[in-house]
Structure formats: structure tokens, C-alpha cells
Image (cartoon, rainbow, N blue to C red):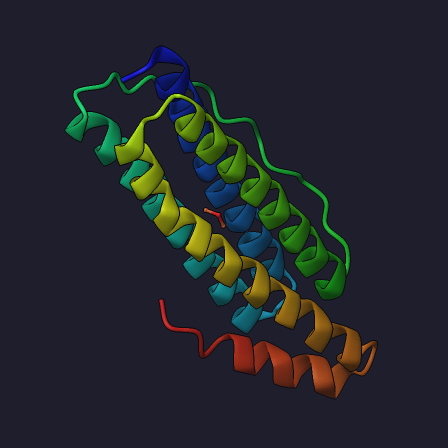
Length: 162
Ligand code: FEO
């Protein structure tokens, strides 16, 4: 495998693990503020992110490439309202999408067809991740400051399958 692709995939593993860290921090924040449904949603999201990291981890190993894990930076410590948190999650997903697209462009440039195919799963996944976060943001916008609407959404988000 081309070294630049190997490095970029290792960097992507770090970004996926950082994503898991961000969602775990959001989950803890929600749990501490008695929004158990949002907390559970964020915990499931963190697990998904770990799954994304492991998918790339296994891919590198399958290709006989080197896994080079770097430091994962600390997630934010302070969070705003549920709406602001989901807006932050959406912004984060958009950043992940950009990173996957750059990686795909690099694989194409280097004619690494196997990596292109591997990344197609991530491209599809990011469409879903952004759509899910966008729906959450829109629903929270509708709920506004209405406590009963927020509690109803908290309950609804808590139904997400792990
Ligand atoms: Fe792994 Fe939510 O991007």
C-alpha cells in the first residue's frame, strides 16, 4: 500500500476514535442533566464510531499495512443546549465526510482500487450519519424551549437501537 494512503487511513482511524470520544462526552453530559434518552443515543453513536475505526484498522491489517495509532485528543468539556449539542454533532459529521472524501480522492489518484471500494461503504454511511444528525437538529429546533416537547424527544431518541 502506498505510504500516503496508509498514513491517511491511520489518521482517519484517529478521527473515528475522536468521534467516539466526542459522543461519549456528550452522552455523559446528557446523563448528568437527566436526559437519559439523548445520553443513550450518544452512547450508541460512540459505539458506531468505534466500529468505524475498527473497520479501517482491520482493513489495514488485511492489506498487510502498518497500523500506527496516534494520540486521541480530549473531547470538548462544556456543552450547550440539546439543540446546540446536536448542531455540534452535525458539524462534526460534516467534517468526517470531508475527510473521507479527501481519502477517497487520494485512493483514486494513487489507483488504489481496493481502498476505493473499502471507502465506498464509508461514503454511504456518512450520507446516513449526516441525515440522522440533521433530522435530530430539525426536531430539536421545532421543540424549542418547550420542556414537554424536549422530554418527548428525549424519550424518542432513547428508543434508538444500540
Ligand atoms: Fe464515523 Fe460518524 O463518522
